Image (cartoon, rainbow, N blue to C red; front, side, top):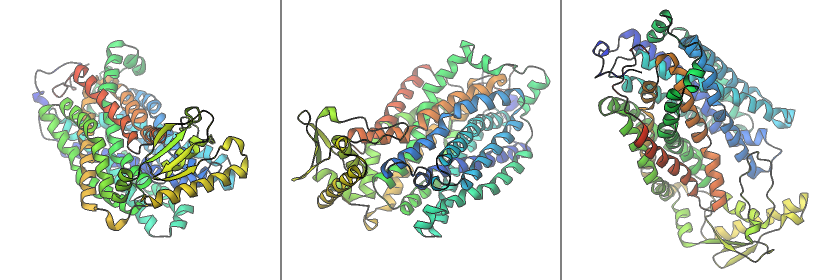
Length: 557
């Protein structure tokens, strides 16, 4: 990788009309892929009820989130498969393959029968389709970022690749909008049973449009010139990750750029909605409206920070976003509670709740396969309180004692499910949860957020702030990654750290955060996961990541 002494003069020029058309087509196709991918996130509750009927209702949502995360887990493998294809065959061909796999997989989710119809085959098909979506998306981003960067004139890569960065937010925005329109055009019951399928079936139209757009693209001129000159890599995987000089850069890119970028992105755009709807019990329509408005306002930040990175560098903007997130997330989510559910905020402060239990009776509540039923008295008590969005403190009880929940001066004995079987356990737990619900309601804990008390303007302001942090870390990331690697292995080498960061560090954020909340009894404790990762990226990036804005990616490798 050669370093230009400045921005290469031959490439400092305005983008031509043909190049703008190519970048627009690439970006628009990527919007549709993100639309397909995010649909699952917004219909996780309905999918949990339709495809995971075999599990307890309290477990269904977590299992559905795990299925959502399955698509993220395989994204690095998609990066390897399609990255290699893109570096050997070409960017355009790979685009066509990834959009076809993504679109058909999404469409087929809408056609897959529920568990009640075909039994265990239903979740098997769903997970398979989700894995195919993840593989396709794993090959999409690296190609889009590489393709746009290799068309952009020197000194403007941050600005032009930032348009690719907007596609994830626009895709999220469009998916939220479509879900809101469909949900409000029918009853809640109809949407839960069959209406959630409509946005998936609608994606076949978007697939047709996306394929047509991709067919209009020309091959990247940088890649085509390299291929014509016979300088392409015959083994991009081994060259990218088998040679330490390139593998070292990939590791630094992961830990010093993409890991922090990923958790900031998913906290600000996805976990914020989970927190509003599932923890604060805000009506989904109100939450979606606030998020849509915030995203619409903040989306320009991607382009602004991409443009700014051409002036002052990629590194300072990305790392500033990470450190701001780490320092302000606890404050920001408490502000969300203050403006979205002030009654809950008041109850959390004035009516402390405790669980006194034998420490040996308290297990880690997160079950990675979603099939375990927690039956100890401590676990039953904690699960019930978390389901009611109630913070609690744990006090050590006598060995062998049954857990006790204390709400103000009200004391409720939990149940030892290990001594009960089948219906007896289900009935006893239901009675216990009813008593706990009555007690916390009497203590001021609301069953749901009071819409009349939601300060929507200020809630949107906080959500805009979280979204701006997203644009800071995400706007310059494509240019930064493209500039780290030579053309011959660029698609492969940049895709893997990006998708490990976003697929694993970011994609697993929702279930990890939910499990941390369940384990600690603190509705804000899940935020420590993105805080720690963002801090790690800030430190690693500050020490090891080079500034790349003046690198000449057009020079021979």
